[in-house]
Image (cartoon, rainbow over the protein chains, first blue to last red):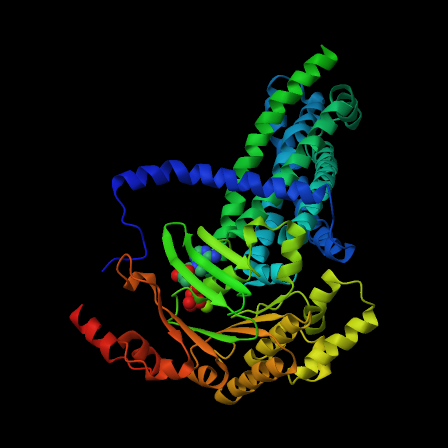
Length: 270
Length: 264
Ligand SMILES: Nc1ncnc2c1ncn2[C@@H]1O[C@H](COP(=O)(O)OP(=O)(O)O)[C@@H](O)[C@H]1O
Ligand SMILES: [Mg+2]
């Protein structure tokens, strides 16, 4: 009896090994391209966009506040020990806040949001996919990318930078509080060194990066959701993959923008 | 014979390495009621989604009114697609919306009608499928299986489609509710000239509504080159067929399958 599945030989395996990643990347790029086309041409009605903004922005606030506070305090503790050896503890503010706004704030906030927002989006769209609701949208004349992806993409791209600013601010405040109240750093020096070493360029480069992190989270999450396999397991897999893939994507983008931004800052400040 | 309204020509469809359909030819003619039967997983839903333009064939061509769907512009495709109403196997109601919003969705999306007009159409549809207007406020999760199917039908009919595809409309319903749905299919057809394509395992439905029956067979059970459409004809021909696979399906006779399992 022959089967519907093609007969597989080692050559098939090798072929699959090459073709599958290429197909995957191609599909993702095509998906992103379609999303951009809709973002720049036609937004869905506002009644579709608001819930997405609420889901991404408002519901993430508690997570981001807690994350920001702990990053700030952890940084203060770690840096204090090292600076004290060199008797530079008065410069703690500069070290902590520079790391916070340039690196750890944006990256860790994005990581948290990939877990909270990304997985939720993937699970939601994945459930719609496997229960034929995505097909139903299409049958009723709504473009699923315009209707489902664009609002979530806008939510992530607009609000994840904003949430990063919140995380930064909370982190700075928490580290100041901890440094002055517990570690005994002088408050005047703390701020003075912070102003001296943390430039507007540093702050905005952090926020700038988070725009791309937001886009990456939204695209990965929606793409995984759209390709979810049938069953509860398929939806769970889509959510897990979203976190893993977007985390790797975030680190990759962070590296890329790090290289790029350091070039720009060298060019700007010599 | 007149031009088919929908046609699959030598259509194959593959998902990854799994081939589901192989070189299917299928024509659907104006005003007919076509019933698609075959065991679970043989590709009936995939076939209807290909007909409705929700899936693209891996190879082969889908025609709407004699025109290759792949060659249509986006707007043209949208306009044609709205002429096809689709009742999904799982009803596929939007979980985030209540019943009213579900039924009104296509109207909100594609027309500039006033909300009062839309409300009238939606309420008409709700009554037409035998529900009361106050279910409009309920969420899909609060409905029973039969109600979900009927809301799905109301939603599919709201845009007054010329072609209606019913994917297993009676599966999972009790016998009385099944008959209610069968009657709905008939009254819908009587109200105006439509094409109905019905996927079903329910021989009552076949007897009651079919003009023509097509039976698909799972590719896994076929040799290369054997056709996947194993029967095409009137319901009477289907019920009197001596072809083993058709006979055992239509009469629910598992003798041969059991013999096979015993041998394996
Ligand atoms: N979107 C899809 N992705 C992958 N496989 C699919 C998809 N849709 C259907 N299939 C597979 O195609 C086969 C036929 O499915 P279907 O047409 O739903 O069968 P049925 O005749 O019961 O309606 C099944 O094995 C199913 O797993
Ligand atoms: Mg099916």
